[in-house]
Image (tube, rainbow, N blue to C red; front, side, top):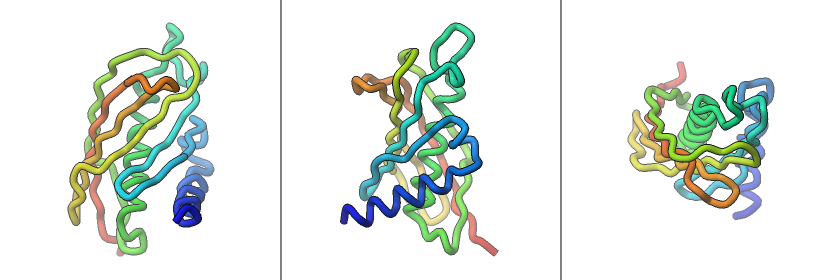
Length: 140
C-alpha cells in the first residue's frame, strides 16, 4: 500500500511543475483514504509587508491541496475539478518555517465535493481553517 501512496504523491507533485504551486514551493507529502496533506515554506515570498504569512498564500495552499484531493479521489479520466467556493478563517500568524494543509473530505458527491482544510504550523498549532467546495465536470 505504501508504494501506491508514494505513486499518488509522485503524480500530485509532478502536476505542480510550471504552476503557482511550484512557484510557492508547495509539496504534497501524505495521502490517506479520505485526506491529502501538503506543505509550503513560509518565506519572504509569501509574507505580508509586516513579515507574516499572507492570508492569500494560505488560501492558495488550501485550495491547491483541496482541489488536488478532489482530483485524486475522482476518476480523472472522466472528470476535471474546479474550485467553486473557498472560505478561510485565519487564527494565528506565522513568520517562518513550514505550514501544512490537511484536506479531509466532508462530502463526496458525484458533482460537488466539500473539503475541510486545516492549516497548521510545525508545532501543530492551528493557523487557519478553510472550507472548499469543488465541482467535478465531465471531460468532453
